[in-house]
Length: 256
Ligand code: PGA
Picture 1 (cartoon, rainbow, N blue to C red):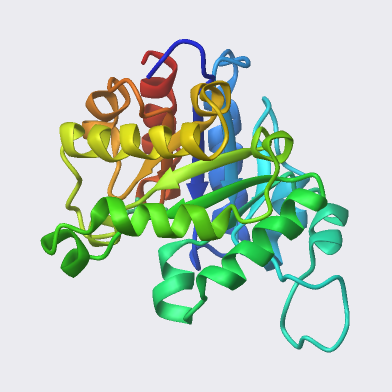
Picture 2 (spheres, protein in one colour):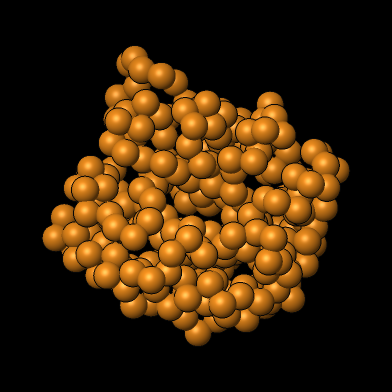
C-alpha cells in the first residue's frame, strides 16, 4: 500500500460467536494489540446483540462496528436497527453493501446507497463493499460491476463525506471459499476503482481513500496482498474469529 494512507483492518464476525466467545475474542485481541498504536485502524463488527457488551471491553484503539443499519430514523420497521440506535451503543463504523446482504438478503444498489447516506449523516465511517460474482468475472464484467456498485452506492455522497468512507473490494467468489484473488488481479481491480474515484471526485480524493481487499484473506496471504500499491488493508471474515490470526493480518498491514 502507499505510505500516504493509514491501513484499515476490519473483522466481520458475521452471524458467529456467542457472548462468551465474543468476550474472549475481543479480550485476546485487545491484549495482542498493545503497542500497535495508531499505525493501523482496526475495527470489529460483532452481531447486533453483542455490540454493547463488546463495546465495553474494547482496548488499544479498536473501534466498534455494525454489520448493518436501516435507512430510516425510526418507526414501523420490525427487526431493523437505526443509525441513532447504533451510535447510542457506541458504534463508530458500519458496513454497507456486503455481498451477503446484496445476494443472500437481496439488497438493491438503491437500498445500499440509502444506508450509506444514513451512516454518513450519523457521522459513522461507512465501509461500502463491492465486488463481482463468479459468472460476472468469467464474463469479463468485474470492472463494470464494481463501477455500477460504486456509482450507485456513492450517489449523493459529497467529497467531504467521501473522506469519511472506506471502500472494500470483495470478489463474491472469494468470500468464505478459501479462494483468493491473486495479488495482481486484486491490484488491477483496486487501481481501476481508484481511477474511477478520481473521475467521480478528484485525484486528491482518490489518493486518500482506503480500498480494502476482502475474500479469504488470512495470515498466509495478507502480506503479499497488502504489499500491492492500491490495497490499503482488509475486511476479514473467517480469520477474524481467531485473535491470533486477525492480529497477524493487522501486523501484515502495519508492515506493508
Ligand atoms: P472471508 O469473509 O474472509 O471469510 O472470506 C470476508 C467478508 O465477507 O468480509
